Amino acid sequence: MIGSTRQVSVYAFGAPTDLRKGFDGLSGLVVGELDQDPLSGDLFLFVNRAQTLAKVLVWDGTGLCVYSKRLEQGRFACLWRRPEEDRLRLTMSELALFLEGSKLVGKVSLSPPLFSLKKVVNRS
Image 1 (cartoon, rainbow, N blue to C red):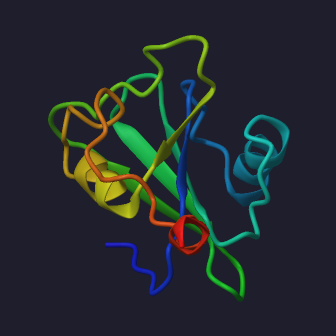
Image 2: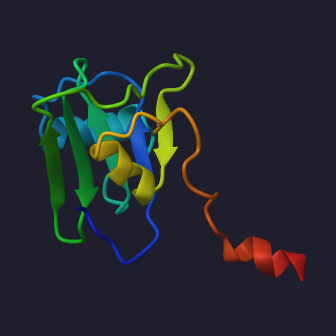
């Protein structure tokens, strides 16, 4: 599994993607469509139209990495059911569940909201 010792966000691209794209093509989608920085350390998830192949783009501090998973049976959950959303934000736990085949990812929130120390400090 893709690991990290810090809190990272996972952004799922909300449309089917041509996964013949490599580092440059996926980085272009991150900048142009998701309006994010591919060098932020966050993870970016892409799925093909057939929902049998997924790729995750991430900057590991020294370079871009592309992780891919191809299903031999079944399909990944559909992340583009809502046309008004071009992206979906997931947690690392939800990404792990997605890559393991959970069909609930993207339909219901499977993780608690992100913890923010600023919210706790402001309540004092």
